[in-house]
Length: 155
Image (cartoon, rainbow, N blue to C red):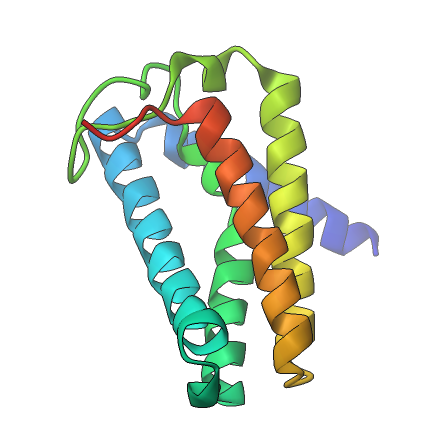
């Protein structure tokens, strides 16, 4: 147990050191890429749960939900480097400066998103389309909550 904790601390320290050397443009590009993959997987779930329920495929739902949960748990928050509320990754960032000043608000939306994304992956494994659909809605609500607070409207 102690060795796992020590390894975790070393990994976090090394990751922090590595991120300290990352250019803002790269951090923005990486987080935009992560969110694009997440959006693609949310779109796949929407297509089979909402738009065309007859197309539901458990394996595809599991793959999409697991990808969303993996990204939710990946530590992407570390890519919000100071000053990265301005700049360009693939496109100009839409992060509001409030993301860097409202620590409690960020923590609240991040915890909610992780919780709901993990529950989505858990439910996807059951193959219960109705339960997955209900949980998909909860994940979407957490996404919207963060977007409403911390993302500028698209121009």
